[in-house]
Image 1 (cartoon, helix red, strand yellow):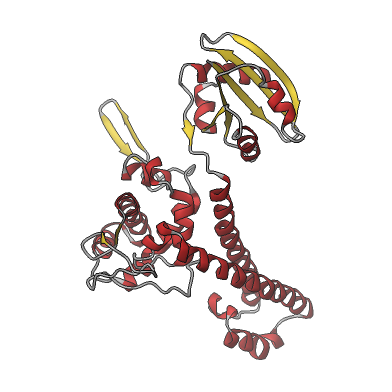
Image 2 (cartoon, helix red, strand yellow):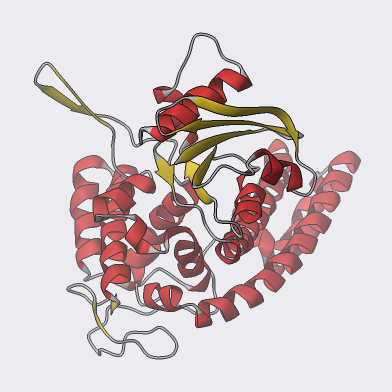
Length: 366
């Protein structure tokens, strides 16, 4: 058995291959990227072979290059690998040799490598999310100019016709000539990106109706087509997470725990988790509370809010929601007041008449 570590850079690769004993059998420096052929040549003749690359922007094309071959591909957790293989002397060659040896003894922490179709789905929902963030950024900049003149309007109103009318009729005379020019520029950007968001929403609604995991998650009050599809894209297959707590940890919803000298301390939630999943789960809580006032999640939120405040209560309730989602995706059950139940109709709404709340299928969550 042979083990290859591929150190990926923007314009070249460094490859080190060791045998089962950890002895270096081949090393290639500055392997050209091109169409993938130089990489296959660097790995030629040594079989069976397991190749590993750290999480980075370049791993997908390496995965797709190796997938048709008999070479086994593995994706490694970059930050955990760095902690294990840290060295005082750091070069591409030393890194590749060290990490290939770690791989040969099973010490490389792996990460799920999403196939191409799933990666495209992730790109679709993340793109829509980023468009909304850009629009919000421009709205905030308009607000900055309004505040400078002592004017105030709710942020969401600027995205509506009545808000634009107020801006033109009430606020415009108070803005300087340069402010009007800048605000007009932002309004054109907002209008353009709003059209892009509408187009993205059409495709997302269609895919959310066809994706079994998204349909299942839409039975949860507060999770609409966009949010359900994002969670389905980021979290499936659910078998990646052995327990609900592992999913919550992946979403950055489990606080850090440190035990030393018999004393256990719980700190802030980690920052290196999947921020897309974390953001959607936390954002879903206010809508869930409004749509399902009698649900166990809502009651937990209300109790926790009295004790630690609304901000921390949202995170704590999102942690419970992550565990519910794990169970639903694992068992195929849909949401109800007392927990998931079996069976959904074609629109992803619970058939059971006791299902808690409803989901607005025409308004993807931001």
